[in-house]
Image (cartoon, rainbow, N blue to C red; front, side):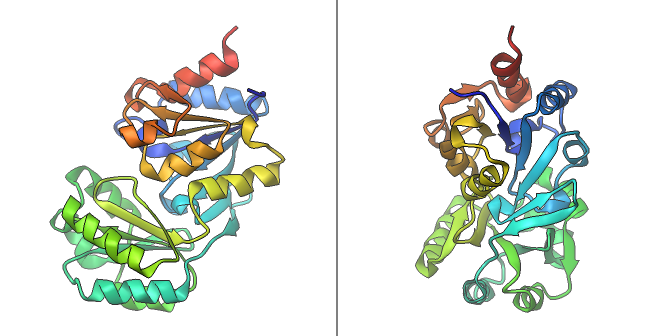
Length: 277
């Protein structure tokens, strides 16, 4: 494998610990890589404004791939570099389906900010969100008085639309409905979420464009992930690394398995590959 020039990092369940924080060891390892001239690229399903500050305040972050590759930001310039917005007609078709299922909550990402209904934020668990996610949701989501009207107003500017699924059967039904529409990128990072964005998006597609802008080849990239929404990125990178807490279908697409996120697996692998004397 050629010399590593770019590190792509999924956050939740991969680079962050069980409390969604960046450990001091991982931070120091990543900053050491940046000081050696290696590009650090965040690759998350989160919207830009909900990226954790302990990651974004770290030295050396070159780009932030957000909303599963739908929008990419340059943190240094504090601006959006490029995006793959959703198709207006697909958004409107999704909203029509959601109106037929009023018990289903959803959220939309617009201009790097996640919006959802006030009723969902008041009681996320009743719609299917896990209890551990409630503080994060209330901290990062902006309530819209009429989420359907808001989504329609910005239908040609949305980065993503996430459907909250109470259980696996609900999720399977929504996958079937979305596949029937076509023309959408469909993925999932957690059991209760179905994450939709523009057909051209995906972490792999966004990483491909980011690497091209930086003059980096796939063979010079190491990417870390743990979920379905990381698979295309792991496959694109010269070395795709899944952490041990990843499901088996993700591990099958990885070149290497790292220790779990709770064991600072990202730091362990990078220390071995980059700094082992």
